[in-house]
Length: 504
Image (cartoon, rainbow, N blue to C red; front, side, top):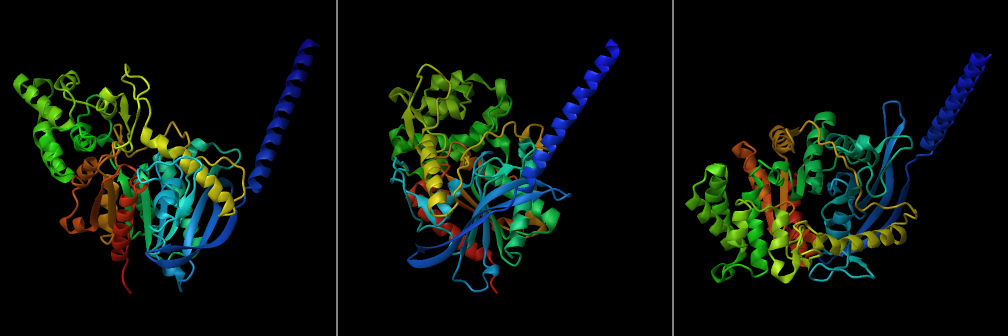
């Protein structure tokens, strides 16, 4: 009798479990069926270069589906299209996104390219209550704009029952954003338009990956790629043991920071920043790089000579540099440069300084240049979405989202993600592809010299080098928070884009 009872109980448990599973499955199915695309359209105008530009704004979502037509995720976007242009389907269109990974597109949208931007003081600061203003430096006069939030950022989410981790990786991210671009292009009839991809920071890796993916998978050719604060090779920024490459590539940015804060010797401070950087770049590529290659076999007199030269170009003490074996990483530099003032440098913008939280610790406290803008961009987007775009949802807009662990995929040779071969492949197969590069001298996250190194090591055919256009700004990682640099970025981008579009 007892075995029978045990069997009966087991069967009932199984039925209960299967019933719960069926309920869960049904529930997820119902939720997926209600996982529909949404669109809210509004009309506005903005004055750019003295000309009134009327435009249509769309806040919406596009649902990604699998081969069985089941929803996998929905991507939120905000698009802006000029409304006074006949045959607008042939007008240039630019797909924009930020980086992280885990960042929404709010930064480029409300900071640089969109028709509205956050109100900032001349020094890039903003204090509550925050505000928005028309962006006279918007790129909308020359191209329509689509700002994309990848899955898990902004309002973009995985479908019910789907694991968000399936979107958290280099190749996974490229596939989902690439599918969004294909669907958007089809939905809004933009296949005849000149097409551009614009990314910032990690978004530059995404832009290059997308150019390759779209080319290979759908024969979707882009006219140009816009790289803001570029990172195409992780080895150029990873201060891990055994990797000496970042040290000479960061050195000019260290010098720029020390020059800005008046820490260099009188003879260097008397020179222009460009002249100082030209001098230190030569030292970094020649004497310093060679000394690092020698490792522990370097002679003591040469070691001292290199250390003294590093002290000269950074204002750090020779003893400190020797203690660090001629290798000072970015976080030690940011903590050390203004240590006598109890201040720490910003990583995104080394011109910004904040109060050091713990002067006795080598741990990097926080990035004051990032703290300046996080609350500002978050608050203004919520207000903007509700009041001007008509997106009246109470969902959490994730300006920054935790998407770790991030799968760097097959392109991470050994341990460093590298997409140089991808951009070389796209430019070689489609020789009309143009590349715009924007770099800030005071960027300690993706230093400009590292970007130069990557592009001078692509092995491009000489005929393609003219397609690469580098531009430099007296600002940091988000150079658009500096009004003067934003104005220059607008001028540079507009000229470059017009020249990159075939003339009929």
